[in-house]
Length: 377
Image (cartoon, rainbow, N blue to C red):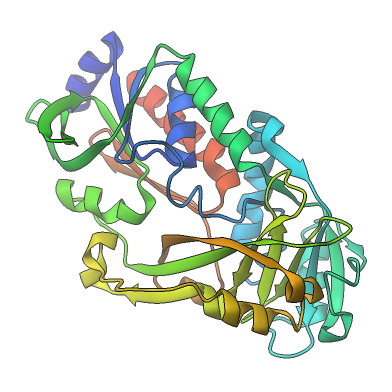
């Protein structure tokens, strides 16, 4: 597509399509909708139905990624923009990180050293004993992290979208194909119930996450070699005097985090047991290509294993599990890197392969800057 044709179409009234109603797609819609006409497509009946929902809602400072300086630095760069935009949905909670005495991928000295070097504040401090078996860890710190309140986040986003006339939210609309027209327009094939129709757009942003490669394959863009994991996050009710988050680092360990402003509801992550299936390879370029089979909750096994670190787990009440399919780039396990990649494909198309939630505002602003630059050519 020629930039001349794009400039002619877009300067009048550019039509933008965003595919995917998770936190990255909706944040893009809100920010881009300040300037342009935006249609946000979500194949489910509501927003935030997949990875944004099945999440531990951690507001990162970098303590979760001691083997990836790139991820820590990205968190440092993007956190303030996110906090300014989504201030009302961030919930303060005491947050602790511990290095296991055995089996950790990082030593206590190296763990503390990286945060000293990068000037990320922390305190040497233990959580209440009901949350941590101190004899199982070699060091414990209190981190200035928080959690997101999912309900508040969803309500905030819906209000922002609903009060902006530039944004059309198309729920129950699945994009099943895309192509480039001769004049540079992007033609999306949309399935809504039993109806299939085409619609033209000047710009398209792919924020589908697990279906990242579907969009790329339709338009001949390079995809990513992905690893898909079917992950379980049990929801627990803990009978504790206080609320706090505790994470054991760094390897086959576990983490418990409060759910938003709830008094006693927690998510549990167990590194080896949370992942029910894992598929890697070119043949599984899309989540739709993988066969997941039948699966059941592993809560009982998790409870038995995680009680060695978290005494409160022994008397926890199981409140159900969230299941989600999560992609990561193949080979990321060596450093556990979780960076957000905003890919400018050209032809007025972008993809967001998302990392941490707090990078959503920065990703949207990057695409906004790209579009403004195109319009000013």
